[in-house]
Image 1 (cartoon, rainbow, N blue to C red):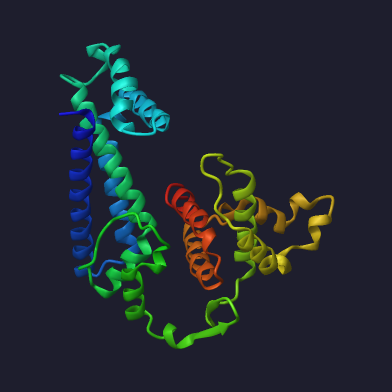
Image 2 (cartoon, rainbow, N blue to C red):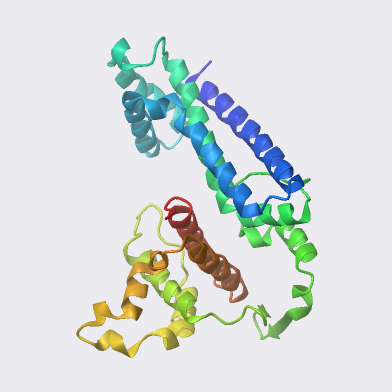
Length: 306
């Protein structure tokens, strides 16, 4: 069996098994009247424990091999997993002595552990990123469409999300106003159409970071010029005149603008702000910002609890 086959077999089985376990854990939590956020955090924690128990995480030499594998995948256009393992990882593995590895540890076992590790990481990432969908399933106690996957469209536009949203929030279909012009049809919900000042400043921070700090030639930012102009227009009244002051860095506006989401020390406040913003950018048709905001939710809220 080729390296790629061993890896993919282990990855797929691990992903499927953990997906089934999470579904059962949510069903059990719902039957016990547990809160969704409590259940979400517990599941993420439990998956994290499985990750920490992986041999690669507990052995520094294996960790270095994993880092090399992850770094070198982009060196190949095709069959990247097989070629990285064969050309880059196996020669490094052979350099290790027996006492530098777990007892009776083979290279095939490393591939098995690698597939397990990456599958669990991906399950945790997708479960966290798509938590709004799972929350609706939880609240409605309807898990028949439960699936942990990467969606190729905005989560809110997926058939499952739209179907559940209509059941959970039927009043939104009544509240929507339709604004038509020659080219577009925009739906604006009167309850969520206005951004508050905190959200406006955070949007400015996101735009700034997208164009300056998150520059990647291989993965350029996806914020459109139209959305950039819309954000500038929407946020213009949030900019404090003190930004022209010599001591601008000590002013509250600049601190919020500079720190972004981490300006709020409370994890609960951060979560509410991001969740509200995610909902409003869809209504305001700022769809190209979603990936950037989801990234903040994943890296800042998910991984940096205070």
